Image (cartoon, rainbow, N blue to C red; front, side, top):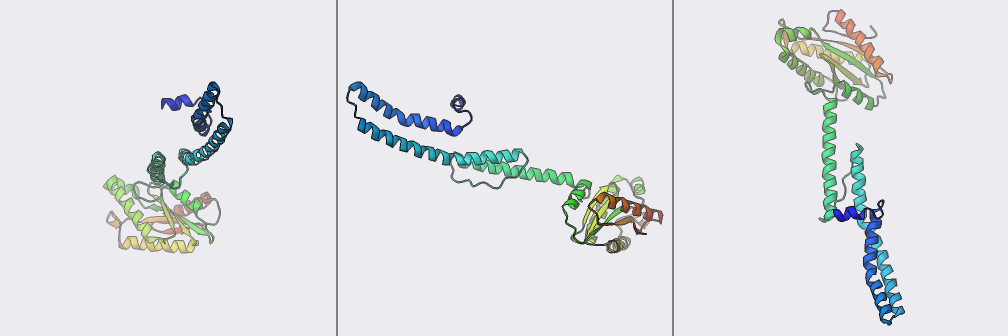
Length: 281
């Protein structure tokens, strides 16, 4: 380590040149010693010296090419670590042998895999509602932004009816159970390519991909019937229900569709709850 620190003053910007200089000096010391001895003894054989010099230069060229090849994995490892530092991903590096370079590349692979797992875990936590397991608001918006909706879509806001009374009468533990049960029922009642998430509190959001408002309302009406037949909980002896507002989503700005769905939800609440309304009514 001390030798590396001392040698860093020689060609500080190029590790390759430092190694080359050390090899060059080491290979030319015998030649210089031979020439010096022959000059001192008066028995100089310049023909032999020239042959040795050419052979030494050829060996130096070979050493330079070999050093370049040996240092390639170090550059690969350095670039990979730089990508990790900048938040990028790294493809699995070829490890090769069991020497120090092989161990270095294996370590980079392990670091890359561990970093990728950590990033995925943090991303999942940032985009997932910890109670219901659905996407949270951030995760839902991100998922919608990544969707390509060639045939239009519909958006629904769903609100559990009288949920505050559930918490007040039966406690927050029962309220959490009801939210979890509704999230499971909602996911089970949707189509495979629909997206749903917890918008906040007792409010949920759904993107019905490649569907119009009428089809989305039909799916939600079927869910209201299922919740009456198989209640997720009872409030004052009656099944817990939900109200929903649906709006067409044919514009790149999701906020406008959400606003219209929210107005439709308010209309559903005003009409006695346990029903689905659209922004067109």
